[in-house]
Length: 401
Image 1 (tube, rainbow, N blue to C red):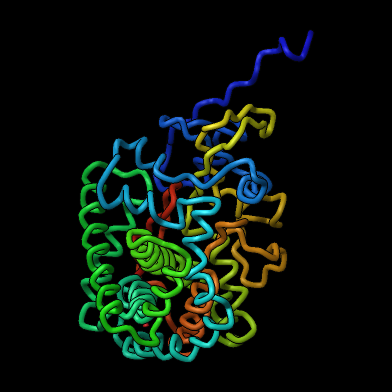
Image 2: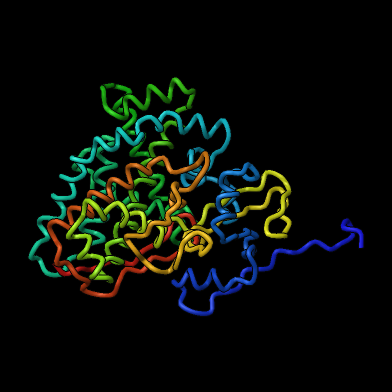
């Protein structure tokens, strides 16, 4: 038969969940094909190789307002976040929005913040000793990244609590949610955007040598309009708070579930903490998938992907791909088969700007925990992280110290 006359393979629909709604890995591994389509028409793919191809190969671009529009959101604070943020832009606009922030988040500059991060972690961890049962998620994991980002963004200390509440609510609007959750996220994204505008206006009126003042100078030189300049700081705050909160909580839970690995780390934190952070990011990625838009027609695993298709490489499965990781479901802080570039932070032009900050926050906090709370243990069920969208969720972690 002439190849042109052969029927084209259709991407099958995504199978429904039949078990625990939080078993993302089991649900995704049970899909009927290497590409599946959900009820919104979004195509998901699961392998590490496909993720790298999509994120670095030039066949797709970052999805922007498409993911909002498919939920019926066409205006408002969340829509503006997707419209103006560097996270959801591409090409020249993405470069213009990313450039003013990129220099400030270089590894050397972030590494210089280690002593300050360590002091912040100690201020949160040391008072916990002897307290019995402790809510680690809210007492430590949520506080440290929020305080660090607040410090970088020049947020007054008196506003820390309000600031954190706005951020953690707003971030829930970054993936598909119920209408009620989306309404709250829109409200708090609006409040956060107004708060950031007030911070920026204060720096415009009284510029100094701080991060925001220098950012405004670079943003003006790059040609960002006020809405774009404001939204990149909102992006920094949202992206730099919730992700580390989830990652830290999940990592400590996995370690305390495995007392042998936790005690080994406590005995040699300098040697084992970096590997533990890498493994935690692999085992429990905080980003479930990364929505992209096909720029042209192409094929993947024998299936046609037409131009305009929203296609999402799924990090939950890509980071457990047996083609890359030996015994991928084994959590091992001594694992030596991590690729040089960790897919948990994405790849290509959109690789996470805050990678160095996140790694250093996690390393310093874990080192402080190992030194000061080596006898910590679980005081309840392990933390569960779930979700297949842009930002996942976690239920909490209580430890005994």
